[in-house]
Length: 273
Image 1 (cartoon, rainbow, N blue to C red):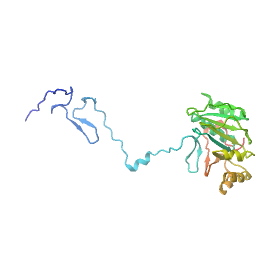
Image 2 (cartoon, helix red, strand yellow):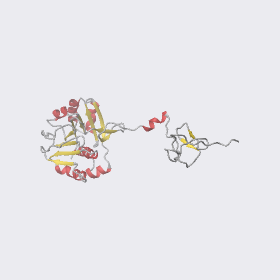
Image 3 (cartoon, one colour):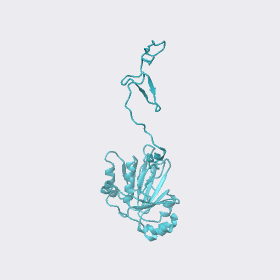
Image 4 (spheres, helix red, strand yellow):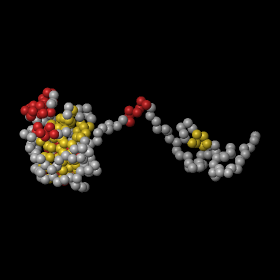
């Protein structure tokens, strides 16, 4: 039997490199993992061999398992008829105005969830006592919700890092206020019922939400929003937590589904306050 011989490293050969048959022979497997016969022996530049684990692979038919329900970003205001989250994009680089014909309870849920996304909320209302509990709960760590008298909303300084939602709870005939739409500042106007200014407000709105209304109001809204007759007939019988949101020709019913914490803070769902 011929004894293997060991040659001295030649010029430029790094110390400790595998040279000759007397040193460890490395084998590169098809998976790209370097293995060797000398267990526990260091490899130049790579250190000790690590633990062996199975490769993380998926077959093509398993790709759908990684699918995530990611849609537009914003505030989850409820669930649509397909049981999918309904999202309202409050923080926008362009002015955005919404009108809600409904109760303050729904507007408060939207405001509270808006704070949860990191935005600030400025409430313009003649019913300060109605919003005080929400403001105190939201402002536990920092000033997230501010309350202002009607017509006295100061400049909010909205920006991409500090978007603002102005909630106008000023009755059926809200005056023109200083809390106007701007980049990164959206406005939600709450109307308890249809008033004389409703056609103008609805005509200027990017989004309109309608809760339960009287049959006469439903007929008027059907003309203003060009609603199908089925929606006109459904509006007077909507549950307390359901809102029909309309944007152009798009319409969807959204159920708020308040959390236990929201119910403890705001009380039971109600159309009128």
